[in-house]
Image (cartoon, rainbow, N blue to C red; front, side, top):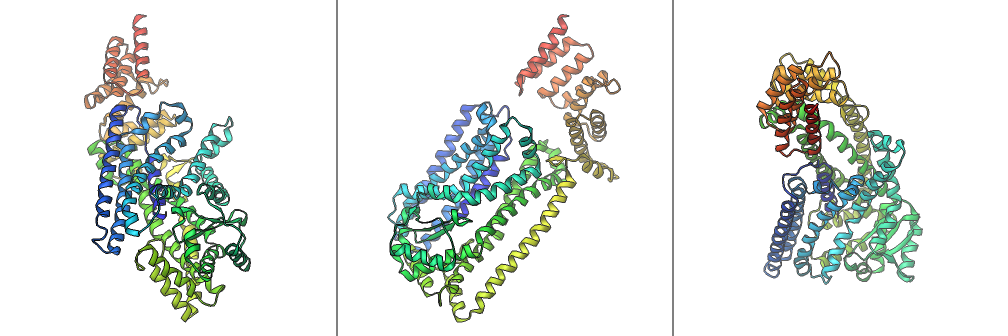
Length: 610
């Protein structure tokens, strides 16, 4: 489940950072064929790998088979991410949904549709992994239950995301200006996220346990025993339920819910059937330890920490693109779209940040929280022998080695050894509690310092409380450079675009002029030509020079938008027949937003008729 969480986060980043194209490189049917071919190839490759592993059962020892099974699950999950990214970024599949109004007004619905495609790839893995899983671990769970249980583990990840962005979409549809002002502002987005996070943490367990098909544990000796232990530990709960995950055959228990009214203690049938009453008591004591040590509350803090990664990655992407000379040289050399490269950097930084944060920082706390929950049994019982014997039973029944490493739990062998160490010397209990407490303090201090640094970084790079870059940042950088280079031409061009978006035409013209003085780039020539041809400011309007610049641009790059600018410059100079010819050249290249070009052509023809 923990690994799937990271996979889903990366899939979400892959999807949300994708920029739809108005005219995809492939036709819809070509993209559909590509999607089907990728899916079939992925399914065949996955089937072959797991079937080969299943045939090794009986030929290799169980530990070796367990390692290979874990490797294949990780390998194919990463491969599923790669195939999913190809669907989105190479085949441009989301672009084909753009004309549909429903997806335009509810973008979360479109993202959910594509996330279900990713779930479909994972389902392919689980479908064929089952053929190796049952013989390796000697399970008797059905294929359907195995697949459903894996899908069900995705609900705590998908449900909050769907609600978070789905509600945001609906708020933006309201006929009021306030929701738009709040949700289109970084501070408002942060406040909305924090409020939602708290509300979801409170109420989500109610929905999740229903989706998992949990049912109340019947009245009887076992329930009375668990209830008595909870009263003794002063822990409230909404219900004690059967956890039917993997057919209830996993030897496990769990607890979810921040407040007692929506807190559920979950046990599987296998746990109840295999453990003695004393062993069950200590397993429940472990879950009680999570509640009493406020681990569920602290997890919220760690998710807020994840938010900092997003806020840091975006300005760092700008800095990397605009102020790192090798990157600018790369953009100029290969004529890359800076916007596309910006989102690529953002995605890479986000993914790297998430992997490091969850794998190492979050993983560190999960492991140590589990150990702290283990040693909580000493607060309720004189020794931990029943919990140790429970671990022995888990090893014997699961077929997994006791020393199997895990990034989110200490190995069972390590957990047993630490419990034994605490029994021989109780000082180890307070030592670990102190370690966790100090680690949390260090995390909070680091979190606050990083939050301040990220805030200052965003303030320095962006303006207006949103993700619009502050032109002063680029201006200051360029003014401090004594020697200008061709890379700086691109920066001046970007600066001109920013001013143009803000309707500051004179500043835009000045920036474009400085860019052209360094290097005559076609898009900058084009933008300046358009401004000089169409400006309503007589001091800026200069049709003859606009025509000269447009011709220079078309000589460098024969693109539809440059032909359109040349047509506008010809029209501004009274050469209407030539303007019509240039606009027809633009239309012949099948441009995006073809209707705009056709309207231009019609305008020129009407002028010629007069």
